[in-house]
Image 1: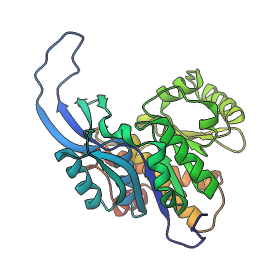
Image 2: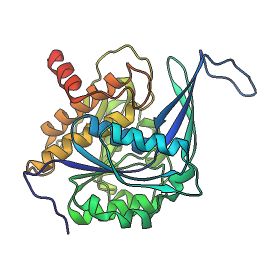
Image 3: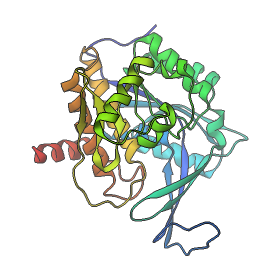
Image 4: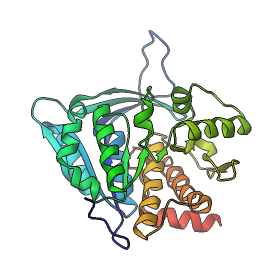
Amino acid sequence: MSMRANGTEPRITVVGSLNMDLVISMDRMPVEGETLAGRELHTLPGGKGANQAAGAARLGVRTGMIGQVGDDAFGRQMLDQMKKMGVQSEAIGVHESAPTGIASIYHTEDDNCIVIVAGANGECTGEWVERHREQIEQSHVLLVQLEVPLDAVRRSLEIARAAGAATVLNPAPAQELPADLLALADYVTPNETEFAALSGKEPASDPEIAEALGVWQREVGSRVILTRGGAGCSFLGEDGKLQTVAAPKVKVVDTTGAGDTLNAALCVKLAELAAGGGSAPNDGELREALAFAVQAASLSVTRFGAQDGLPSRTEVDAALASAR
């Protein structure tokens, strides 16, 4: 049974991956069969789950993480980083035989591409989640992604749904998902590529996007928050019209982790609304939450590193105030 109550401290649980990011900076991406000279190599804490947990904690909401690292140097660094960022890490296991997951990231001024080796993330199973179900039950919001086994994603969503917590699924990396799993998510937060993979549609114009989101929400039930990079993000209003929250213009240094920051910030606002006794947010509240999330993501891309670039609550609030 959930231990949450209205008026309590907002709480978020993130179930997901912890990776060490091996970031190679270069002037451009190589083509097939080509060898290029890179400029720099950085070893940085990452993984979608860890980025999102760190992002939410950095924005001032009590955040716990459920996941797995290896019993190795990278694993110890990841645990130290989570504690440094203020994430509750009691439910992060240390696996004796599987190494800590890694992500090899090719980074240019304009973009990045990523190859992931799951390692210990593959040991974050439904059984591991079940062992830590109380943490989810005490949370106002659950946030999950797809860098851990699907049975862990499903079990997390089931526990949160039964406890009355809001459920947010960031469907990345893109893959086909069963309809009954998608139906467990109150919010699904794909980018345009991920939405095309999930829905089989590639809407180009705003009217086409509105139609596609409407079909999805009628058939699946979860509300779609479509992230659109530098264009911000969009959702379908209660009146059936597309609403878009624009992103501010910034000097981009590193886009790695921008989507993770947006998801974290959205969950921060959802948790604060739920802790205050609110029901599901109306259009105005959701738009305000997304303005906060888009601003946080925009600040994150002005710095290097998925977690080193995470903004504080003070920075996001100040940027929003100056934009008004």
